[in-house]
Amino acid sequence: MKRDILRQANYKYNFDRDLFYNRQAKKAFSIEFVDDNREDVLARYISENTNGNGWRFYFNSEPSESVKRELESVLG
Amino acid sequence: MPERTIEDRLREEYFDLLPEIRRVLWQLETEIRFHTLDILHSLSPYEQLVIRSRVKDCESAVRTLRREREGRTFDPDRPGDYSMRNLPDLAGVRVLVFPRSRLLEVDDALRNVFPAWTSKPVKDARGADLAPKYFGYCQSVSSRVRGEYQVVPMLIGLFWDVEHSALYKATPSLMGIARSSEGLQLREDVENALLHFEEAFERYVQDADQPPSAT
Image 1 (cartoon, rainbow over the protein chains, first blue to last red):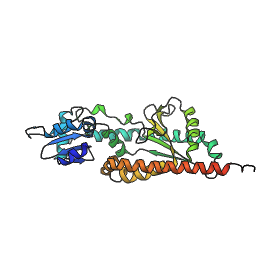
Image 2 (cartoon, rainbow over the protein chains, first blue to last red):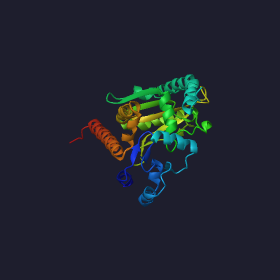
Image 3 (cartoon, helix red, strand yellow):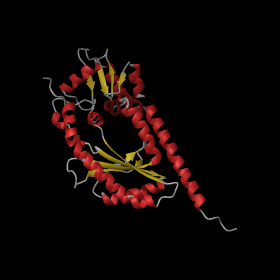
Image 4 (cartoon, each protein chain N blue to C red):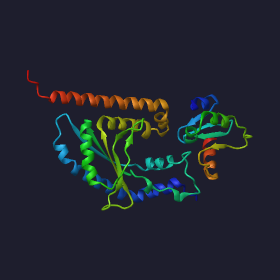
């Protein structure tokens, strides 16, 4: 189950934004992205090295910079 | 002075439209009451037809528009992408019918009155039609605000009322419960139980109406 994979990797669910997020990894997956991708693809993105400098958003449609800023302020 | 947010603009648009939303609702509710009057008067004592109407409240409308986007976030650089006029259900009427055998009759009667309206039935978890739903313009009243009506099995409609006020209205963050896999399963179980009750009730009434067979 995709949600189990995310839970095991310490991702929490933000009900207001419908995102799975991990503050330490600084990654967020939209519910649409999770629904539309296979488990192995999801696992690959979870383990992907992003250098951790800024948040990385896994969306079906790339969010604009202003949306990213808004989400970053919400996710902390 | 702080910059106005997209939410601020949408709230302003909402209150600009509100008189029209109310007029659409009055028109729609009145037409629906008029065109279902014959059915209402022909109901058996155990049958019911109840018409309810509501204006979608401002914050609920803002939330609905926000939820259409991945990440549920308005893009502040694209304010023109969002408008209250995109919502089909600012003015909404729900016709609750019991038992379900009356639903088709009500649906047909209203379809003849609003033939050009777009059909978008409410689906159950498996994708089957649960309740007919339509939206469109009451041209004599407004060309900016659409109305919506749905014809719903009464037991399911009353369940939706309770679920909506508990999970959506009181605390929007509880919406996640409704959308979790467990929440969806519970909802499906309740809807199936209510539909089974109606089917059993209708069978019982049909059997009771049968004249006793000659022996």
